[in-house]
Length: 437
Image 1 (cartoon, rainbow, N blue to C red):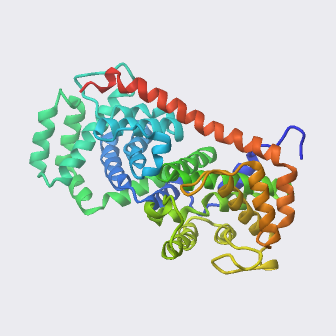
Image 2: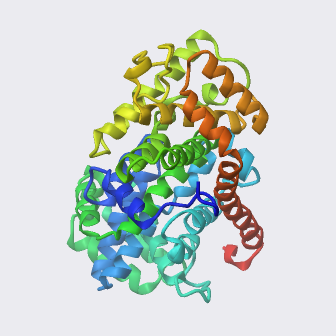
Image 3: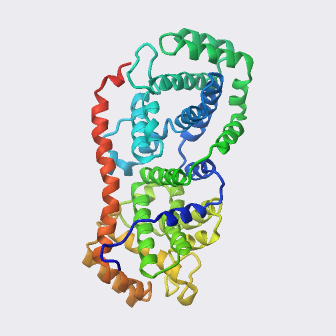
């Protein structure tokens, strides 16, 4: 162990991490994983992105600005994830989602603090802005533009005819909407089949093709992947916080056992996404405060099959899927789903298993409090006696417990600093003139 403690990911490790994914562009991956959360913002976001793309092209925006506008549209309602589960009251309990303005605020804050779009997140903040109540922010006009596109999508969904939609646009011209935006939108509606494309679902292939053309730098791909994990985290905080702890432990054990770069990144990734199948498990079971019934336990155990199904569509290296699938196995054969035992469980699998166990112990869950360091060590030693987990890995944890604790605390502090800043900004914006309407 180095004297100055455990190190964070190196650039080479980040690059190796990205190389594990099977899709050539970030959007396919993001969409694949976010769709599992079950939120409705994706479909509506793609419709809005399609309409915004048409208007941006009509107005001759450059490639960068068009990309920013489309991405802002795609994720304009991502704050909805915060109202998906009662579990997030531990983090964002005071958030109000009763109005579209409140949802815009939550989406803005999420994008600013937990996504690569932080520099442009104000566009989402102003997505319900009125043309006749301008703000000093340079992005306000883009928010007003998206507001028009959002109304057009809504009117199409409500079944209004092209003539009725054009009349409604003219009715908001100069007040709600910018005159130039209105004129260009009306021309689009009159000269193209945009309405039919939205109604038929043909917009999906158009927006998909457009997103495929976008070049994402490797560091941005990683940022979008982390955004996905935050989405899952706020969908169910306990599930994803556990996953982050497990991934950190997997990384630590890989370094302590001197595993190669590729295997280290495979283990980290398997631990991070190994429980993603829990997004298909009901909140009632995930957050149950007491012991699960036999039937509920069987349902909960299905998450490992769901994880395998989801991850098989995402990863190029199928060893990631194999390790994720095996992280509930135990050396005595009492684990699941394959009931592997002894030498059938190799070192990377053993690391994934003990990482999951430790993460479950040191983090509080709906049914138990977090273990202290002494309690964690005692429980691990009991599992060694019962031949559940690898004794050498347990000893490594005991020998390096102080540095491990410092490493985990450092990473936890980063996230909670973001949460603290997010809440502080929300209090400021909640009472600002941004919300004049």
